[in-house]
Figure: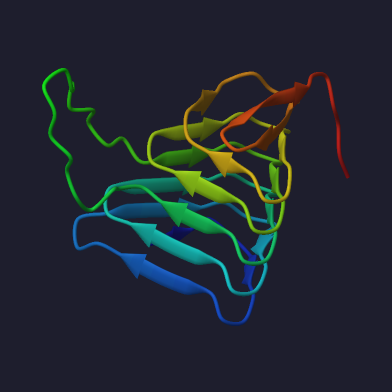
Length: 136
C-alpha cells in the first residue's frame, strides 16, 4: 500500500489487501467512515478524491461460475482518476475505471470503464447520467 501524500481515512474503514496486490492512493483526498476496500490485484486512487461513507471497492469475485459460452475475464483491478467524488454507499467492482473529475452518485454500482472525464455516473448498473459536469 502506497500513499503519495497526505490522505485522510475515516473510522471503521477496512482494508483487506492480498499478498501480491498493489494499492496506490494519491494525495489531498479522503475516504469517509465504514468503507471497505478488498483488493486482490490492484487499486489506484488518484489525487484529490472524495470517497463517501460506507462504500465498497472489490476487485475480484472470489469464486468462478462456469457455463458453456463464458469467456473468462482477467481481473484487472480498479482505477479511479484524479478529483473524483464517489457518493456514499456506492460499490466499485473489478475492472472498473472512473476518469478524472467525475462524480459517482450515491448508492451506485459501478462495473465497467467510464473513460470520459467530467461525467456524473449513477445507477445499478451505473451509466453516464450527465456530461460536462464539475464539482467542488
